[in-house]
Image (cartoon, rainbow, N blue to C red):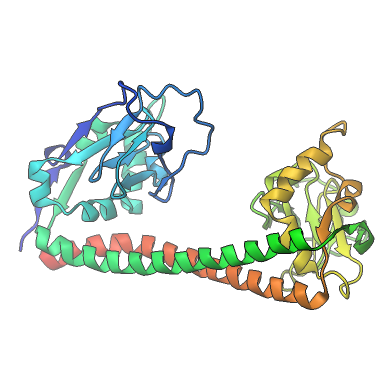
Length: 370
């Protein structure tokens, strides 16, 4: 079993067939994310001209020419859809079908080596776009299609296992969300103001030197601001189990609770820091669960809309209402949520391992054939 080198242009053909007759509507619109997966559009598709949208059938490769180096390339197996005219679509031609397993080609595209080649080819262009002619010019070395399928089988088995695990994770999330919604409907809500207090301890002795910020993902991170020459005496100290948020970006998710394992840190004076003043009535983890829901983020815009700078200060935080059941019920909900978070972390880790496997599979197929 030897190796043969081809230009991709010998194996693929482009499709530009569009929705000019408006036969297909907004319910069939899809996009491709950086994980190489088809997703529903994020924007509002109403009033969008669907005539230039391109038709995508099973067996199509679809990619965003400005984001392919980030992983925005997918292989369609889920039935018909339409995509923005900005996407590039191609299929294996008759020769390609005989020489390439489509999943092998998908694995080939989802390697850092391929993404580096894309960046190299785009370097120096006025508007970096990886066109179809660039794609067709890619050289690819192929083992026999039988050899390709052996390695594809390994990849697909692992991907199916990951999909099964992720579905269980989503089921757990539904249980958690359902529990919370049921609690919200059946229990009365209270303002959290009497259960929390603001923390304004400053770093006046410079006893803490770890400067942190809070990202929109709800995680602490090293501050991106230029700290050279800054006076940290006025920075606020954040201790374990204390909450900290950016009052002008909390609607985007910029709120976090400091964990015990993270120790103390300091944050910009503009941040709001507070803590639960009695964990006998309100668990910090239970409160965090409510303050990191998308429904809460949307509500902060309403609370902040009347202020001069549209900021969500501590006084607005005190007005937030949530159901506060018995502490034993809170613990049950927190345990379910922690289980969901842990499984979500494992799923992300498995996904990363699967992505890291792509170059190993391609290399293995070539070395075995050689």
